[in-house]
Length: 335
Image (cartoon, rainbow, N blue to C red; front, side):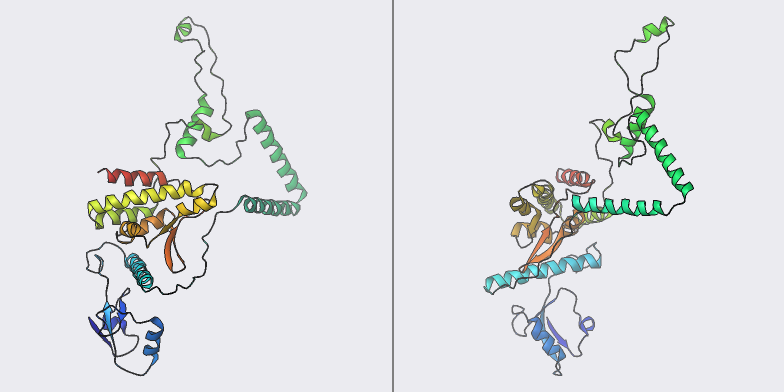
């Protein structure tokens, strides 16, 4: 396709879309125009400026896709970057080292302690500014809390992060206690003997009362994952989705298990996915919605020495809904 730019900054009127590749006229779309040269031509007074356009067509460009414009533009950028790297490798051109990009990491134990110390310091400062009456009331309340905790055997004022099921089980155990098999049977009750109720034994940790059968199957997945999952299964062929999910599940599982090991030299290999790899490209780049799905579970796009990678954070084993997400992907594979 020949494209003539009569006036600069008129890409939309000329029919250009994001992801188009500008090539020299007469090269049949095989010889790209360097970016620096394009800027010089755009700033020059010479008109018209003629180029050939190579366009990578996808379902979205043909009006059959279901993704948003932002998601489509993101995939087009990945495809363009992958093609550019392949051409550079064939020409044996020297790669320029990109600036190192560090992924956000979770707070270390030292940082958490520092934040807690700062919080306590602010509380102490607030206490110092209180009146004598307020200080006495605070001390009395703390004394009552300590007395209550000692009587119960655990601290009811301490916050514990639990699921709704764990909280329900803990409440039942604290209210009704547990059944003791050594308690006399109902036959003794028939003889009008008065029996005492079971002794209440509050748990030290409400989470510990959850039975082994409790699972996370009811944990809702994130909205981003829902959107990406739907895009994958509705915008691609069934066999293509099954093949993609098989690879994606393995990458996610490795990143959250082997990628979090103590040997960092080995662990980082499981947290990094090179998009230029043929199998990875077929499973992620060329599958509509797969890139967004990987991003939803925690992978982040980064550039290193001209290569595009999806990198999973160190010290992070995934969200609590991740097992549910993986189970849904596996279920679809078997459908």
